Image 1 (tube, rainbow, N blue to C red):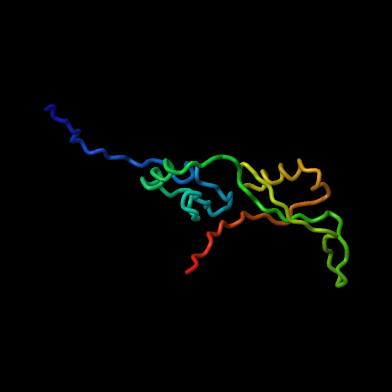
Image 2: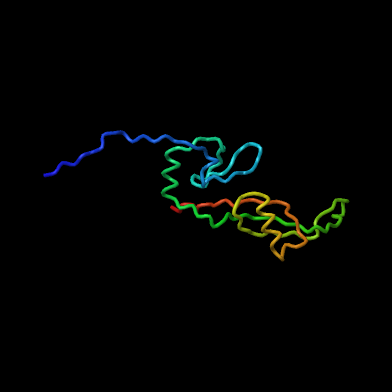
Amino acid sequence: MPQLQINQQPQTRVMTGTCAQCPAFVDYQGTRNRGLCQLFNEVTYAHHSKTQTCDLSLKSHSLTTTGIKVFVSLATEKVEDDGFGYPVPVETQQIEVTVDQLTKEAVHRVIRGRKDCEGYHVMDLWRPIEVEPALVF
């Protein structure tokens, strides 16, 4: 019976890289150097070292670059008096857009390309929170 030879050398893996280099990291583009880890749905710093857990999770999850869903609050450029001397937009609306990166510039590019958004400017934008359904007992 042939004997099975097992490689006795331990397989160590040196982790190199930071969260900023990970494809699952979405940079907030802020001054605090933070972003969202899409694998663990947590806020993290860009300078954190990648771990073996990160690498294993990346292999098991397929992060497709189909885009990032963002909600945008728009207001008309025309304003009117609110009765107390303050200017308020004549009309506001909220829309959902899909962008390739979570940056203001990417959102503005998408908004400029839409006919239904002409005459509006971006007041606010946010990424929706994915909420898992509650367990029912």
